[in-house]
Image: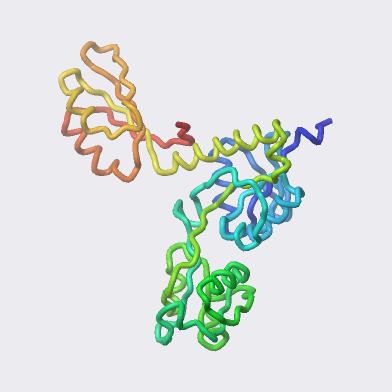
Length: 294
């Protein structure tokens, strides 16, 4: 029977971050089973119990100790003013690896040009608490309404402006809205209950999970590449390789030939491979990475 103090209770975000989070955990090496009707994903690690919780609520449940740890956005930690331990920043979102933004947006034809023009206006948002504090800090008095969803369609009839989360800005543009100001940038955070963070076993377990998640994220933007190079071309080929560290060089059975293996940013690979080929590399193989642990 499993001892309760050897169980880590982790909250996984349900909703927009769910699929990207599950994908990240799987890439980190955790096998997770999720039933379409269950809120309790099953890990292959017997010491982990998990629950799907809305990111908006995660920090509160972690703060109260119902969960030992969880993943949620920095925005929702700020919104709730939760007293939690931020273990790590994990730069991923629904669609990419960059932080998301909460912005003030208005219709394209609105006379509102700056935050000062929001005095006396009605603003719809899901981020009510933070928006109120932000406007108060800037001495702006406006009416803030909680939005239950479809916030982009509320101006101009139901609101003069909105505060909305955006990753690409496409949805705002599609609804004929323009951004007035960014009020908060947010990324995903791995957070812990402060009492759980003082538990040696739980802390080590969380640090191990974070290390693997960070390794999986680092691998998202990198690839491995290996190639054969003759001794005469070795120096020229190596000069083209922007490696994390020096490339691994192994002598091949054929005298005067070497195998080079290196990890690099995926974004440069299309330009680099033709240059490597021209410099004398052959048998070039590109391969995907699961984790990169510095």
